[in-house]
Length: 296
Image 1: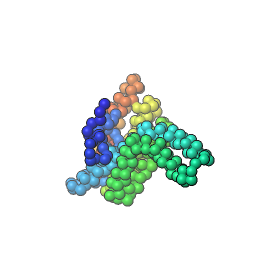
Image 2 (image 1 turned 180 degrees about the horizontal axis):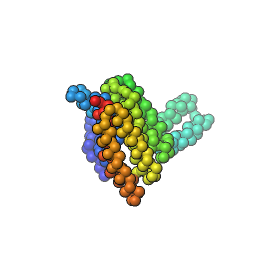
Image 3 (image 1 turned 60 degrees about the vertical axis):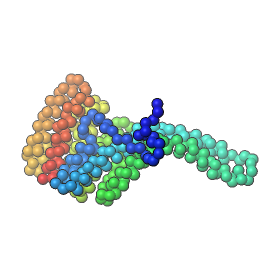
Image 4 (image 1 turned 60 degrees about the horizontal axis):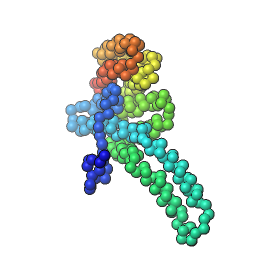
C-alpha cells in the first residue's frame, strides 16, 4: 500500500505529527485531572491568559506526557533493541580479533566497527517509535520550562515514573499508572498557576486511590477494589463537610449511594468495564466539586 502524502511528503516537512482520539473506557484520566487542578488553582478566572494556561496544561499532561508513556510502554523497539545489541556485541568481538591486513585497515578498524554498530543498532531505530518518544519528551520539557521551575520538576518526575512503570509487572504497574494519570496532572496544572495547598494534595491522592481501584475492577475484576473505590470518596465527602462545604459533601455522598447500587449489579454480571463506565460520572463530579471547593 502506498504511503499517503500526509505521512511521506515529497518535499519539505521532516517530522509528521499524528494526533487522534484514543477513545478510552472512561473520561477519568490526565485531561480531567488537569482541568480540576486548574479549577482548584483558580485557573478558570475570567482572564484570557488563564484559559491559555489551562489549554497548554491539558496538552502537556494528556497529549505530550501520554505520548511519552505510550511510546515507551508499547513500542516494538524495546524488544528489538536488546536483540540488535546482542548481535552487535558478536560483530564487535569478531572485529577485535587480530587479523592480518594493511596498516591503514588496522588503523581504521575502530571507526569501521563504530559505523557498523550505528548501521545495525542505531539506524534501525531512527524510523521507529523512539523518535516520536524523543520528540514528545522534548516538547513536554520545553513547554514545562516556559511555565515555572516547579512545573519542570514535576514533568521530569512524571517522565521518570513512566520509565519506571515500564519495568514493573502488570499488577504493580497500575498503582504507578494511577499516580501518573491523576495526581501528577493535578499537581502539574496547579504548579502552572503557582498554587499549592496540603488539602489539594490530599484530594489528589484520594482521587488517585479511586482511580487505582477502578483499574483493579476493570483489569483484575477483584471485588475488594470496590471497597477501595468507596472509602477514598467517603473521606473526600468528610473533608468537604469539615471544610464547611456541606453542599459539595452531599453531592459526593449521593454519588456514593449510586455507586453502591451499581456495585450490586457488578456482583451479578462481573463486568468491570461496564461498571467503570457507569460510575465514572459520579467520580468526575466529585473531582469537579473538590476543585470548586478549593477555588472558592
